[in-house]
Image (cartoon, rainbow over all chains, first blue to last red; front, side):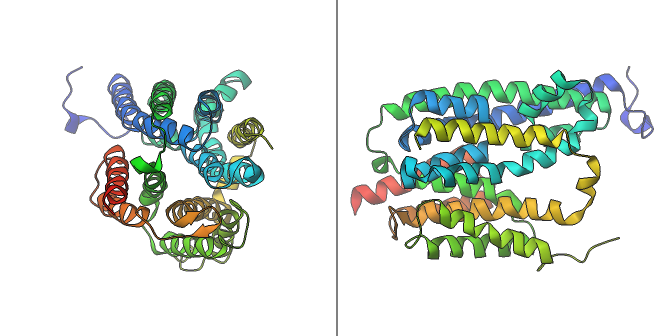
Length: 242
Length: 101
């Protein structure tokens, strides 16, 4: 098994090596991302959710962007902004549905396996899986990332929620600024081209301008129309390649 | 609506979207417009949430210690500083500004 790399023809990647690389990637991603859980847990209790509500979001929803959206809307509008909170979480969750379409042929198997896989189908598992060279390593990357990240995310959410409970007035510790910075961190890697940058700036302006006149959460939903319009007409986008 | 209702309905909706993708024919992904709108939707929502979290106060728009904190966070993300350290830096900046001004 000590064939030098440069001698390996393309397409004949050693399965055991590919699997090890997939597992290594999943461990790295899981450790890096699980740390978000700490900020999520603390910010969630700061937003007014209790420990169990916070844990249900991490255990059942298990999608960082959507979870932050729920607590963000509740933080500014309380429980009366419920419809906006649910709609915001669902809209941010639509991309998971697109990942599912891409993952379906890789996951294979019957309904039990697909349902379990659906729960783990998020940014990170899809990214690690689709970066692997062989079907077996793609599957290994998906399941290892999913299980490690799920475990880490929930343990750190619990730690963050317990920690956040002890804090009292959260503005004193700048946790409201931390919540804004967390959204910025999720947004940042997506701003590589002109089109998303234009959409981001326009959506922020729309949301800020509408905030004083509309109920909490609604300006954020109206701002999402910017994406639909720009996406539909492909303004500021690249020319379609056949 | 109670917070529990919100938590449960939103969780079911997000899981339902994940599961729905396994039911949809793969050809949908090959159409560029739905894929483009979906990815821009994420950008628009996250950016709107940044704006509201940074400037919102009840139903008002205010400029306070959060603004410099979020600007600092943007600079640190641009410098590829790890997520958790950036969040910490933003919180500390806002906390210090509030303690001294």
